Length: 249
Image (cartoon, rainbow, N blue to C red; front, side, top):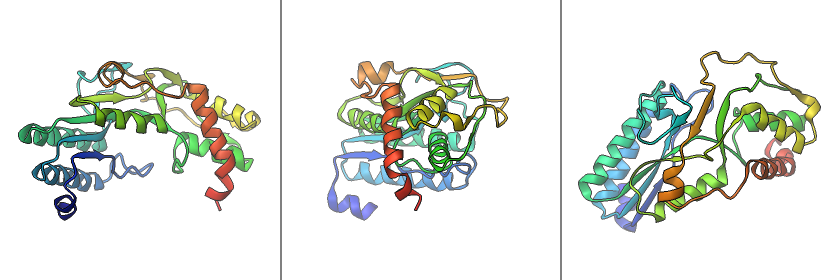
């Protein structure tokens, strides 16, 4: 990557890459490799006269002891993944400061949308319903801030075009019960009969509510989501309905 940057001389860097294999990434030693690679990329970009950098972080950097998470709040991650992301944030921002490169760090909350990998809430529920299998779920009472993945991509681009530096949240600013996502998706796919809320145990350690404070995203960066909750789920359901057989052979 050092050679690539040396040859192309990019002015802007938007970095999204990381290993987020469902069920593994929270504790994976690969988090160390991604931290090292990301810091090295930022070093090469800075030494190559880069002018603006934006990186993807995570809401897992925060302490989940309050319902509304603000960028100025404490970062005391409960997972190895969150710890390594927080270390990376500190590193790339320090490099940016050293070389005079405005550097922003977008903390993603929960996402859904087309092309989602198996092992996540919306992809697993959609796959079960379209296969005619019961979708076995917890009671889904915990509230989470979900955002359509297309809107998340647009938020990163808006940040890249802005002059904001430091951390900012990427979310909808509204937490909804997880069961609402499941039920809305089942209605769009016309398979409400296959939803089994409460069939799986709930995690007693799950915080009851996590919401992104999106004041920076909306006011400083100037971004607002294109999709409402209902529109985003409808768009996702349409994608799954059209692509399910192709995606699953």
